[in-house]
Length: 350
Ligand SMILES: Cc1cc2nc3c(=O)[nH]c(=O)nc-3n(C[C@H](O)[C@H](O)[C@H](O)COP(=O)(O)OP(=O)(O)OC[C@H]3O[C@@H](n4cnc5c(N)ncnc54)[C@H](O)[C@@H]3O)c2cc1C
Image (cartoon, rainbow, N blue to C red; front, side):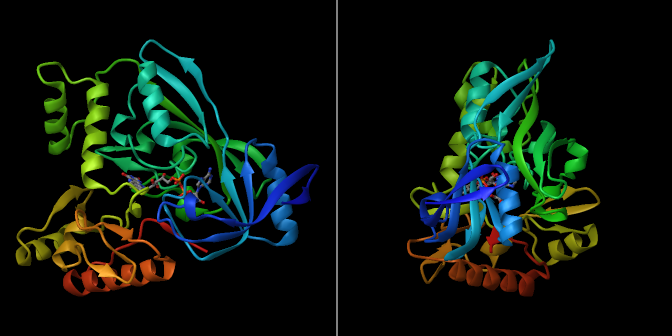
């Protein structure tokens, strides 16, 4: 442990800390310096320290959307800010503020227990609440942006705590201000949501979800609890548990193409899976990868999951170099077959 004076606060930095249990790929990665953030007051001191020492700083949540190198230089700051509070309540809705270090899934589950509805479709997504706005997490027809009312941040450029409106966050499909427009500038300390107090707002757009809900509910009217259980059941059947098989969920975003490009592809590949979106179509990246023969393929210690081609896995002992190499091979083969470039969803660091 080393003590570093950052501003007026003493920062307790550990050195040479293993991140293997702190990234969902389970890669053997070591942080040069490491700190746990348990109170927002540590942030100004930490950022001052990094700027004075000219050190990069990785803000770490649950490590479920990161591809880490064997050595991580500078400082890794793991966000452990805790707490959930009701900010206001009307007849129909409730506004809740959740600290960034809370577990996403446990928060969704706790809110459901309170009778605060609207996040059930996003159940079982790994990671922290603080990371959820970064790529505007989404699943089964709901995205974070549909429920967020404010994001509380520490602005490292202005050296001040502030809050951002949803439009300032520039949310889009698996993207936001935090991920691609101004990465690294803001450290998220808490997220505010507006949730429903009645169960009239269930989002059941996906056929598999409707069917699973109907099976679980039986003769009853489908409730938010049924929806939550159905989402958990579907996800458990499709996605590998990172505790057993390292992964970062979907490794590639579903690519968006023009209507003309979609029509051209559809003529050649009649079973192409795609969904209309905006002026064009979103192609199912998993279908494109599977069509190129990658499903279940092994490459050194990593590979493509045998039940879902969109998921790359660490069979044990794999590393960033192997995953990156596999991802590039997949991108190239999809591009050669369909003329479509896949974009990775997780962040490579550094
Ligand atoms: C099995 C599995 C299934 C998944 N399913 C989905 C899914 O259905 N939908 C979906 O959208 N994603 C999914 N993911 C991806 C991942 O769970 C989400 O992106 C999640 O929000 C990442 O949270 P995290 O805390 O682990 O973030 P990390 O991986 O720790 O960090 C991700 C990025 O956010 C930044 N960050 C983290 N916390 C903060 C903060 N407080 N302030 C500023 N920046 C921060 C990091 O620096 C990094 O750039 C899945 C992953 C796995 C392993």
